[in-house]
Amino acid sequence: MSDPRHPVRPKPRISPLAKTQQRRRPSALIWGLLVLLWSVGLGWGLADVGRSQTQDLWQAPQIGTVDPIPERYQTGQALYLEACASCHIGVPPAVFPTETWRALLLDENHYGQRIEVLPSPQIHIVWDYLQTFSRPKTAATESAPFRFRSSRPFAALHPDVDLPRPVDLNSCSTCHPQVDRFDFRRLAQDSTGE
Image (cartoon, rainbow, N blue to C red; front, side, top):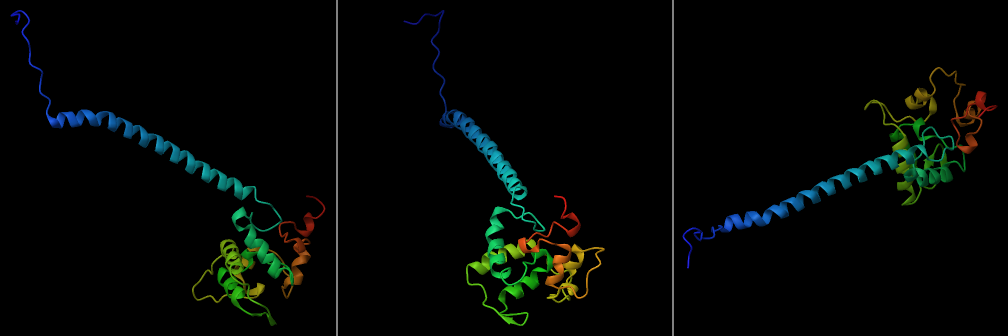
């Protein structure tokens, strides 16, 4: 029966806790690999989104606006130009503070002329564009300017420029000969070369 030289050893008993831990080891390793793969994929995805947004910003069509316009805001810019530049030159959003644009969008009495306020959703799309590319007022006590001469952003965009008196929409073409194309980058002295 049993050989005294080779005693039969009883099988060690494994506790239920040890069995559970043995089963978890491969599972924990798999979960760890899944989390690692997910993290790497998420990192690549976020890096790609950031890269594409930066590329979109600098590959946006240049029609002479003060800032490049990413694709997201191009519809707002087009609606703005359609509504406003059909009567006068389109004024870049950076010329007036955000608060001025808000008031202008909602006012039916536009500099003495009765106009229709843009319907929804167009007004929201235009507002998104104007709000993004304009600047807020600098002081809470400052009132929203409605004329170039009292607009701090306009003055900041024209440092050391001897501006005609009065400054109005017609005087813009003196320095910006292509305002009819919403091109404010090209100046009169630049018109011979590109």
